[in-house]
Image (tube, rainbow, N blue to C red):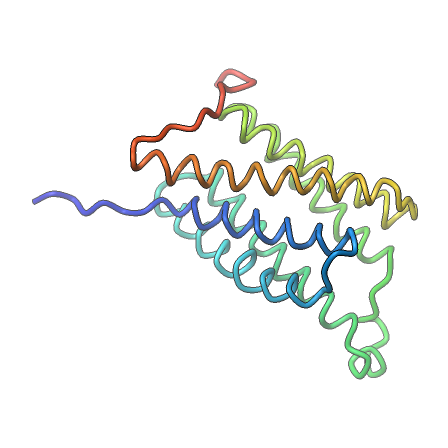
Amino acid sequence: MAEAKLGNPAVVGLGGFGMTTLILQFHNLGWVSIGPVLWIGLLFGGTAQLIAGLLEFKTGNNFGFCAFTGYGAFWISLCFYVILGTNAELVKAYPTLKLDATGLGTFLLVWTFFTFILWIDSMRHHTVLALLFLTLLLGFIGLDFKELAGNKALGTLAAWDLIICALLAWYLMAHVIYAESGVNLPVGGPWLKK
């Protein structure tokens, strides 16, 4: 009996990561309010990406498992951080919930280190994945400086950089989807040998 063909969970993970990263940068540039960011972040960037990561586990793909599960958790935790930290009644009852630059900066800083680890391994896969993680790493570094040092200019540069990152994620999503119908988008070779 023929084995049933399974879908590639990376398409959902890349789609959720790309969309949430894109809408957050639209917010950071002042183009949209926080509402769409939180809803997309909780559902597509967070929950759907977390599920995609868990499905990557079943395929034996440790990189996808770590990246999608990790960044799914990132979006869920960031959304709750913003929701709880901006709720006036909760902040009144629990002042430590209030958003502050140091707390958000430290939150982003630990994700910068996480991203650096994944960027090193991404260079062993292909160029587009390496560029995606490089732009993500640079974006996190820019946001770290914005939040921890008050450098708004680097925050703006980070937003534009992360728009490129989001579009690279969607390019990889399209690469996986289109390959099934015989259209092979180029991704380039690895930067480091395995």
